[in-house]
Amino acid sequence: MQLSSHHINLEQLVDQIANHGFCVIDNFLDDTVTSALATETESLKLADAMTEAGVGREHLAINKTIRGDSIYWLNEDNATTAQQSYLQQMERLRSSLNQHLYLGLFGLESHLASYPIGTFYKKHLDCFASNDPNNSQRQSQRKVSCIVYLNQNWKNEDGGQLRLYLNETDASNNEKSIDISPIAGRAVIFLSDTFYHEVLPASRERISLTGWFFTRQLS
Image 1 (spheres, rainbow, N blue to C red):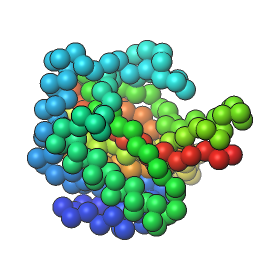
Image 2: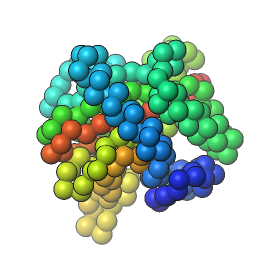
Image 3: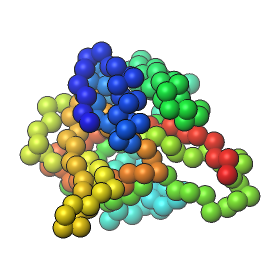
């Protein structure tokens, strides 16, 4: 379920999503883009332009016992060259997912995230079903999550893995999961309403760029 290619075969990626619900792919963004995005994240931190991330349905509550990252939402209207490269790659991915899986993805929101040393994000799901039937026609809903890592020279002992829960149990009835190292250029793509996941603590700063594709909720 892990692909590695400098020339990404989107059809192969889509096949992994269709068959398994998730995919891990290296070199999703090239080194110059990931390096530029990492530098931009540091600049945003220094400029105090990143905000503490919230939790809950509206992501308004700050709770560092659940998550400890700071984030910066991308804006297409003032995107840097590196951010534009990312957005173009994501548009190719959106088009391919729609073409082959008929997901009806129509929008994208993305944020840079910085996790200071020792911080984490507890087990969670990216998509919540609406409890308000009156809003169902108007609401959009996260359908596909894509996390791209920007960490140069990352080592396994640095920690900070993404733990992805596979919705399976082993012979001892323990929940199966995989740990994915956040190395630069690697992307983890999965169905937002299907896979619980968490960010494990790291011994160095951990940075990423996460995007969510939306679909209109019709029922």
